[in-house]
Amino acid sequence: MHPRYPRLLHDSLSLSAAERPDKVAIVDGGRRLTYRELHDRSLRLAAALQALGVRRGDRVAVYLENSLEAVVGVYAALYAGAAFMVVNPQTKQDKLEYVLADAGAAAVISEGRLTALVEEAAPRLPALAALVRVGEATERSLALDDLLAAYEPAPEPRGTIPLDLAALIYTSGSTGNPKGVMLSHQNMVFAQGSLVEYLRLDADDRILNLLPLAFDYGLYQALMSVHLGATLVLEKTFAFPAATVKRVVEEEVTVFPGVPTVFAALLSLHRRSPLSMPSVRRITNTAAHLPDEHVPGLLEMSPDALIFKMYGLTECKRVCYLEPELVLSKPGSVGKAIPGTEVYLLDDDGNEVPPGGTGVLHVRGPHVMMGYWNLPDETAHMLKAGRYPGERVLCTHDRFRQDEDGFLYFMGRSDDIIKSRGEKVSPVEVENALATIPGVREVAVVGVPDALLGQAVRAYVVLDEGADLTEQAVKRAAMARLEGFMVPRDVLFVPDLPRTATGKVRKKSLVEQA
Image: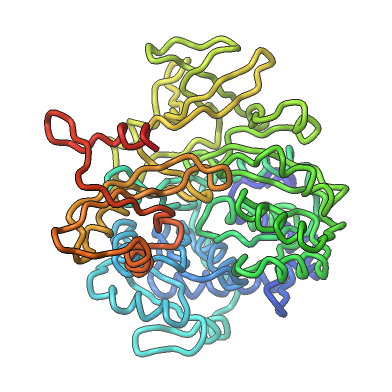
């Protein structure tokens, strides 16, 4: 294992612990963990997982809020020879049960009220061998601290190679059920290396993460930090922006990743009372387009920051980025392919589109996913035959324009998935949830353009005769059934939904109307 080129994802932690054992790896509120401690805990938990029955290739679910225990869980799964899957703590019971059953999770690491949800689902999860709880043990769970004390930091080598599965990242699917994106060690080691290269990061950086670790943008802040031997500053929420700014200043954060809604909230505060985050040297944005008019305000807060606009999707992590020096001269662009990869546009007939044209974006590179877990048809929809014999490339199904200089501009999505706040939202999943609300007869969900969210979720609802639901009542009911980012921004009541001759809802008409 060359020190600069780890073969496996967890090799980065072994290297950083050897090179910088006493450096703070994670800041979690008032708690701090050094690289020696992170490495030691990850190895001990890996040994415990193996003793509890986790084998090479098994899946270990990390169902926790952003915390140092969550990062320990990710690396423990890898050291045990397993693959990890981080589950958003907002995930409701039905979806939780679906992803754990679909993945055949052998172990779950959880906490508090979340553990109770796993315990409720456990009888219907035949592959589940172990439930580890942060805090005190319960009748069905083992306490994390007890396991760390009981096992030595010496898990058995499992013979993992770079082609093995490292992670399952669940993302919304067009059928309404989440899809597990399969990423190998090779995929993820390459991606983290390419990211730190173009972002120009190093071991002295202090990287903020206020995005859920279940969201690949949030996950990679942790992976990049460990890969570099940098310091990760974890935040559980962005509900209180002023508190986040205070943390950034106190911890001398140098890298601030966000999505447009985060930056809009900061700018709103800044306009009322000027903010200052002078330590920040990198501001990164993805998920939705960062409005060009935000740039001056962000530079007022962090004058030395380089601002990176990017585009990506879970199936390959990141596709392209715009050099910060070009943010003002290439407004609206998301740049060119990340280092070590290639992109090109094809028209509807499969012909390559020259500069100046518009087409569907295709991606070549070592970061392209292995496929979707147990979904061969959906995999075939995304992974296509490439230019060269035997290769498969990622068809994003997103339309882009490429200018004469080769810079890319996002034009729209070819599929039905809504991308809002950086999360993929399945319209079918939202429709199914809203349809269970008493008084709702029919519902159709579409994405509509939004300057900050990228796309906003809009629901068109037909009520039963005599029902007197209000927009707020529907939203409250939706909050009880869905994760926050899936709750519609707009609820519009209509007498009927437009339909095709075969009786299908004509969503295109609703989008055009919007």
